[in-house]
Picture (cartoon, helix red, strand yellow):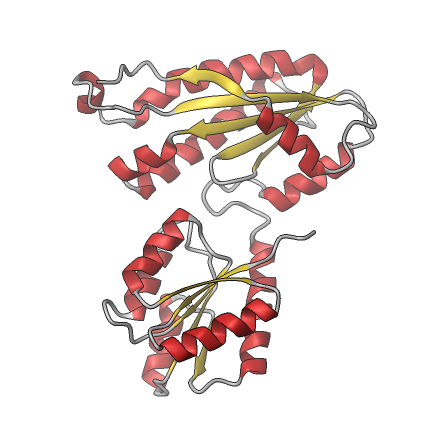
Length: 292
């Protein structure tokens, strides 16, 4: 079954929030609701929604500030945002659109109109989702298409690379620094396949901290070893030198790799290949930081 799009509704009027939650749930969406702008930002940091329906007037911070913060982080910079508000002035509309909202609808809203705006915004966002906004690598949809192509082909190998304990790093140094880690990992993987892989090798960013490399079986041992060696050397250097020297890093990041080899008839779907690679992963690269 296809994944359901997730909508975050940021609305402090309880009746309106419940109406929107019920309506969009009945339309087949996963819906999360909050009345608070700061809570909305936290929810988006944990797991970015596919779309936000955002009121302007909130009890803690302005809806404009919420949008400004979301647009300032690479992992939420492309999330479509629709303003839903009782402010009808042209200035308010222009302000929201300048901040990066994709649409604007006034209260009381026409639900069929809002439904169409949501559907259109999600469709446009799905085109952009072909590429990860953090790393610039092909995203999960492109990876799925590539895996479909190899399902019944022999000779390929898939390597799943996961960066573990990135969350404590984000908490200590911020999500911008965490995104830098992911971008660097993506570059390392691309460099490895360019140097020791084949011209047909493929690298994708398939989930929040996970990457997929598709190569050929004669190359997979070398590709895996090169990834392991380079990540082991690189992970330390994302931490400030003072924290490394004084043992302030209690949960250092590490990398886990899982390898799956082609077996015609074994896999019926791309998801089965990913699940096999994820379930077979093991710790293969740890920085040289000694926990305090």
